[in-house]
Length: 113
Image (cartoon, rainbow, N blue to C red; front, side):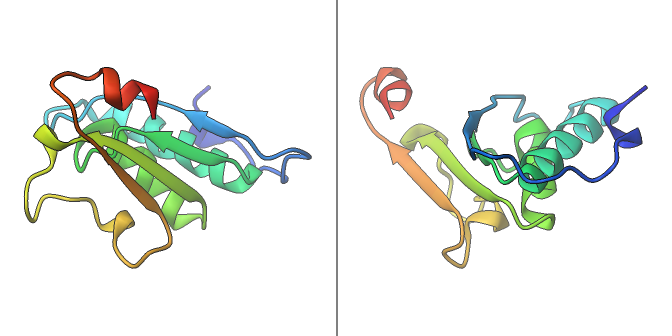
């Protein structure tokens, strides 16, 4: 049984900020993309905030699409070395969701956020 078989979720009593990191590769297999989308959908339906690496491709993008299309809130935390002009994900445009850009010489600053 996959997450595709689940019924719409009711809102959680206490909304959480759930951190989920996944692939950002355009070569991610479709079954992984589908499950990531469904995870984003469930988080949104339950009223949780989806926190991830803010990727525009792969599982992170699919999870963001699932959350966004079901009116969820998303916080992306990305390092400056992965920010490319014009390659940001549409869910972070328009101000509804938040994209946090971390600096530093390594990923430690990102992990602190």
